[in-house]
Amino acid sequence: MDPLTALGLATSVIQFVQFAGKLISESQEAYESASGMSCRNINLENIANDLLNLHHQLLKDASRTPRAKLSAAEEHLQRLTRESIQVAERLIRVVQGLKSRGGNKRWKSVRHALTSAWKQKDIAALQTRLVEIRQQLDTALLICLRLFVKEIKTQHKELLQAIRKYEEKPSEIEMQRFSAQLEATADLSIEGRFCKLILAHLEFTDIQDRYERICPAHRQTFEWIFKESDDGDSTWDNFPIWLSSFTDKNFYWVTGKAGSGKSTLMKHIFDDERTRQHLKVWSKGRRLLSGGFFFWNSGTEIQMSRNGLLRTLLYQILNDHPSLIKQTIRGGFRDQWIWQELKQAFKILAQDDTICLALFIDGLDEFDGDHEELAEFLLKLSSPRIKICAASRPWLVFEDIFENGPSLLLERLTRKDIQLYLQKLNRALASSLIEELVEKSSGVFLWVNLVTRSLLQGMANADRMSELKRRLASLPMDLEELFEKLLRSLDPFYFSHAAQLVQILKAAPVPPKPLEMSYADDEDPTAAINATIRPLTVSEQAERSETMRRRLNSRCKGLIGVSQYGNSNLERVEFLHRTVKDFFDKPGIWADIIDATPKTFDAYQCCSMGHSTC
Image (cartoon, rainbow, N blue to C red; front, side):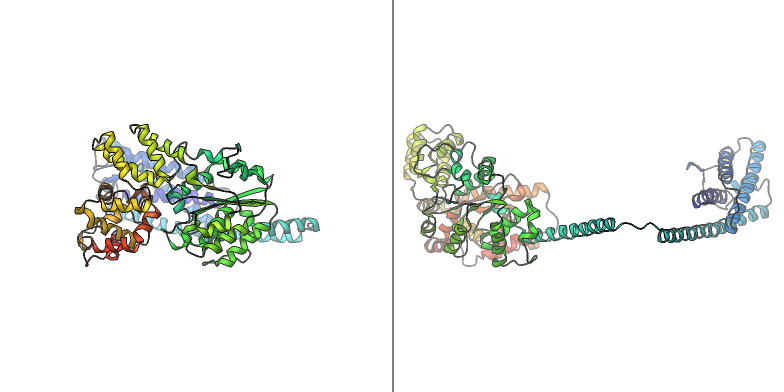
């Protein structure tokens, strides 16, 4: 008897024994039919039908049992099945008899009904026998399954012996092929895990943070960077020509005043598909790799470090081309990468003549190390197969190293972009006012941003055109002078609070979320500690964040605000620009900020309160 047949037979017997046992038990609970329906007073018609169904199933399963020689356990299982069939037939007869005598009479229990046809001791004996059948059934089934397992083991052993005795051995070629496939599979598995570990250890938490915080270029601005025709303009070196040319000048320097839009331009270049199309012309069929890094001295330590630079570039390149990992990272992975290891990996890439590499690096002036050393490293790294486009302020250290290569000075090229930006920002601004704004801006987008806010405030106050022009004329052209004028023009009632906000933001290890800043800015430093511990609802979080945003706008004249990146989880309270942060670092300005707040004010305690609350 195969195990499935034995199991099916045993299941039918168990189902019947359980059903019959419940019928004749002493319990006065409601009778539950085999279908799961129950009623408080039993109906013999229902019981008769259930018994007939179970009896039919027992007969059906018993008929499937083979007539071949059975083991002792299988014969025991057969006997229990036959005995269950007999009990079922006996119960069917008595229930049908009760039904014919009692008609539609309802009983409180089957036991109650049976006492009218059987003696009490007969009912008790049947109940005992049903229990015995169930117990013996478990033992018989277990023995059957054990015998089956033993038989399988025997067959398995015989099969192995037959394989060993098989005279035709595999050929040497087949063995070698199988061995090679086995080794290749193992190597792929190990190599795959190795590659994942390398990438995981190159990546760091803030690897994309600065890139995501840079606002994309306004529509139709900076399009001149991809102008392909060389019309003899000597103010800058044509960028598409440089991208697509095979030349010995493979380092391109983007420079410009603070706030002129260098980071926005670099992000535009890095993201635009036209950059890659021009580079494909240069690579001439070689595999084209690219990577980008944006230094940020307002971020974490690694975001302004040379290790952060190379880890980011290597991660981007190797993540896109994992087949290069094994040959590039030869020393294995590290929890703490050292400069020499990362530098060596780039050297290996540089020596591979099957690839071309394009790197885009923004904010060299925001690097926290030796600027001359960094500039010389990047210039030496560039080669006929490695193009590097980097941006920085026009500091002498960079000018001395990059002066002989292709470059552009951004503020000379953004006049039309600023006009377009102003026209799209507010069409109500008169063309004469826009022209004057463009002239005074000297190509500095940040200056335009701040001055336009002041003009829009004047328009909200219904200023006449002559008043708007006077307002514009009163604003300094120099960025730092403009910052100071905006700071001094703050409402005296709010100046102390604005000074507190500046100190909190300076003390924060990373730019805080608006919600976090709202708790750091709480007047009562114990408010968060004493508050009831419960999660804020979404609406409560949104309300606190919006209140903080409005507070910053009214106190800080746009020098501090909430940066938005299309995702509320990325919103942070930040200085408008790095130049604003540098402005507050000036000794005289910082002294004024400290003097404006009470001596008991502790910005670090406020930061701690905001961080621990959120």
